[in-house]
Image (cartoon, helix red, strand yellow):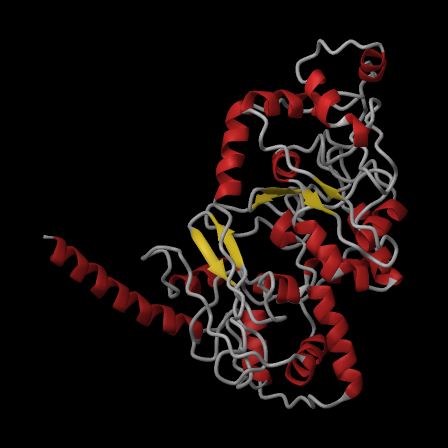
Length: 446
């Protein structure tokens, strides 16, 4: 019986592969481009380097301790781990044999030269809107300036049949059809530039937009329902709401946001986790004009109904703690472990120790980021503006009950107001942290 089932599955898979291959050649996949690109053009190369920074390609395609762009970084998904591939110009294990048409088709359409489909962990759905000129510059830089590294790609841990690639042809048909960049209404060129970067190379929606049942982003650009950039959980981090609304960016000024993007900190908060990597490898290298454009575009995103403002409650916490009243659940744990940096008034030290009062990461719709950074700790990136990279220790040694009370206390003190944190939330995060993927760096001499 089992053999018959396997035979049936194999036959169905073979038939479906044929359908998937046929789909790849249909109208929703543009033919391979035959454009010739001069990969030795110094202006094109310089532009490509800047664009690669904007796309943060190095962060995903470099394992800790590994050679740049040689792959091996494990990316968690609900079904298993996908490992970023080698995109150095090595002709056998990287993209050294790609012509421009192969490169464009992989980056914007998610299809390899052999016709196999890339997993959408590669944000090709966002890269659809990247212009031809920018794609050509990226190709010139990768071919001419990235050091080739011979390193085989690590297979995914996603189990069969979920690991099959042919269904991705159908996924692309539904969720990643060809599209051009459409500037937002209003005609503001600064906002248009910000939208182009956010929707395209910066692929902000890949982390900050909620996913559907098929793991598709619910919106790839501003949508009527306000799903775009409204926040999502990825690898145990809550990529915060970037819309100009209550738990998003309504309490931030354009200048504060641009400063955060460039330095990973401001008077309100600091970046940890994945966002720390984004600033360290990408955003700090962008021009002030581009950072302002991104900030202005994000601030232009309209709030959803009923979420226009965030109004703090009365701060009764500071007076209670200063008076020695630690009766509130979690208060004593806070005083013991947190006040040295974040102070009794929750204000921390500007651009050194993040404030907890009025910090939108603290009272976010989902507490995952707050829980994870409290348990596992984190490190701010160092930038020219702030070469001192402060490190927060982890407090995973505390019990689930103590951590749940502490998180609830922080989310509802100093005028903050948010949902409580349960012991089950702490337990889930322990499991998440314990099961972070293994990364594969190149061996010595490779």
